[in-house]
Length: 345
Image (tube, rainbow, N blue to C red):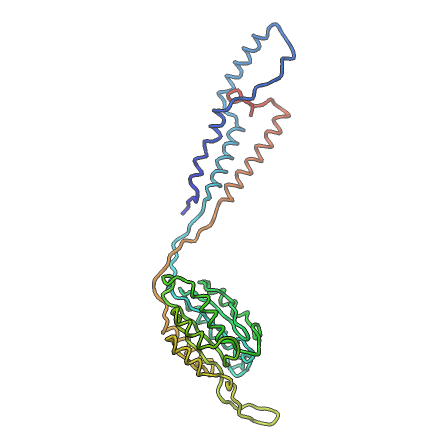
């Protein structure tokens, strides 16, 4: 479907004709250079020729007016609108907070039968979850020594995926884990949104450590509860495992730094849940559970893709103007001006 954003611009179409009709020719200030006794006869013949020529419309004038028409069409902002496309909308704002501290480089996870670090495993599991959240506004927070907003709330899931893939351990520091700061940043980003703009505000925190920097997580959780943010927490990391070393086989606990108590309190305060993921399979099940706890609604938002087309009539107007200029230049060197109602074109 074709339409115009500024259709009132077509009211300017007769403007050149109005200027032509209501303006007077420029009077010549030059005095006659030659006086002849039969001037009256020559003047009468000249007027007869002008009267005959005035009945013919100059091709240059038609070309100029045609260029003016295309210029007005371009000014009216023509556009093409496609078929309506439906987008499921849930009215939910879902913020993802991912731990990228130094402990996330621990290689105690297996994905596709390969040993990988924890952050790589999180990316592999979290990406399908993001792809399923059609209709939710998603945001991404990364935290380590500090928490910062990697991607604000948006419907653009491709951007969220790209920003998550580009994240790496140490971006926010490697020595500490600021869980409370991540919650506080989510509160800051969500507290100014009108209540009618979001039916549900959800924060999902994934970490493998304990809070040892920034504000206390429980304090931040109470602030989140005041503005209606529900927080789901995930403790990530393998349990005790046997590893080979220089001294032989040893039993180690990769998740010894994981403090589950505050994570459970955060979830309880805000009405969420705490989950424990010891491998990628359990992490996948957790995100499947979250899909069930916070389902995507079936309400649809429709929009029409549009494309501006103003450059086509504008290009034609410029081309006609160039042709008009060249024709006028050639006519000045060959023939006298063409007359229309007693005016030279």
